[in-house]
Image (cartoon, rainbow, N blue to C red):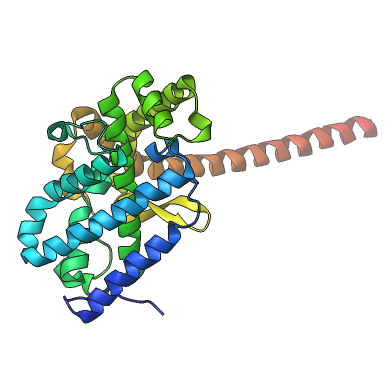
Amino acid sequence: MIRYWPTQPSIKLNNVIVELFTTTESKLKKNLPNRTNHYLYIDILNSQNKRKLLKLILDEFKNLLLDLIELNLSTTQINKLDQKILIILIKKVSKTFQFNKYLVDYRKIILLDKNQLYLIKELITYLIFGSSSIQYKSFLFNSLHTPYNHVQILFENFVIDTANTVVKNTIDDLKNSTSIYNFFKETNKCNYLYTSQRSITLFLNNLKWQNLIESWIYETKSLYNEREKVLVMSSKGIITKYIYLSNVHKIKYLNKIQVTFLLWLEFRDLTIPKIEKVILQVSKYLAYFFVNFFSNLGIGLLRLFIFYLNK
């Protein structure tokens, strides 16, 4: 039986939110290794500090959510403030995560993955106003029948992505590999796989290449396929899932190369099926021709052989 998210602000919605936070917090008690096929910024942290960071984000987000409810904001106001809400959350978490040792310039804050983090708008709407306030075009199903698991996926993805953003902004602020190495070693946050300056440098270089490829290729493919990659917590660790998401409004933000790639994807899907059909038909004709040709050739040779035997 599918369990649906409450449609309106109510005691039922409050209870479901408490359950959502409690369930997610219980998942943090276990190890959450990276079981995806790509690098995450939080991979640089050891298990203990990874859990601490995720728990800190949960606590700060809970407080921020209560503040937003008290302010009695409308959905329109929430939509306008989504980036500011996110920056406030990241700022609070970063100060604790860095022990106030390093000062991050939040005017230049860089969001890790805008494709996923912009979902905070939808997530906060679900948590404060219920599913009825979500636009129908955003997701595949009717907003009045939003599965509980869908909101849980958005919630866990948001927590993990925020953790990645906090670590990324810390690394960007430290600027060089020596400072990065010293910070993570001095604060005992470092994963045993990245205990040398060389290993950290290699890890960061791999992340840069991965981010570059994803921004140019994956972002365009996800827009075309209307599928968004999300990160969730499972019994095995952090894994990747995909959800339907309409991103048509993002086409105007694509650069020339991304537009070219998008057109190529469209051209490929239009032409390849037709080309495959033509190739299949030609192959059938060629197969028919060669079968008949070799059959007749074989029969002719056999008759010729019999003719010479009878001479």
